[in-house]
Length: 309
Image (cartoon, rainbow, N blue to C red; front, side):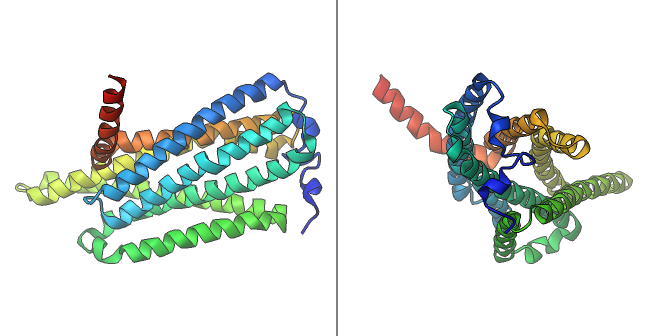
């Protein structure tokens, strides 16, 4: 261990209370209101998504397991990470420095753990889509549910080990975190790029055929739709993470100061906005999930309409 909690809350840390309290309390109050709203909406939205996925029989089980894991991370954000974030800011609003450091570190380690799992799962989804494109008919024989569940369990354990390594060596944790982040983003982007190039090649081959098989064309159209859905999810993740990455880059270039330390904390709100957006994306882009959500919510709507009437 490199030291006590107070060591991790030194002036060179992101969790330095004197720097945190220098900013107006109105900013913290506004942030808390936004975070609480996101927490409620993310929790409810992802519970509904998990219930809908449980009822979806038409989705390929390994693909459903991947979406369930992603929805679980978003649910964890709403149930645990955002309340910890709020509690951390409350210690600044009500000036309780003795609890600030412990809460800040608990929130920080929990949020990085969930962020790591989310990034790993999104990368696995991209690899899954690439394998579906490359393997075609043999894909379902290779991507078995048990294998995917094992991979997901390994990713959760790996993220937990990496998160815990912060207490042993902050520099080690940050170094391998940066490598892992770059590796996941590079792999995901490469998979979708290869799929795109494959689509173009396939389209060119179809045009050269005088009598293409309708079944193959239909399967490819369905696959394109699935990839498009996953690209939307990946694109929204990149969009929500960009402000945080920009703040980390600013800290790396110019060193940590009060302004970029505070900006780093606030930019996390954009990341958590992703946990609220994902259920909307699932409902909008994936027809099977949309129908199951309607089937879940319609009886509730009818019940409350009857009670209200």
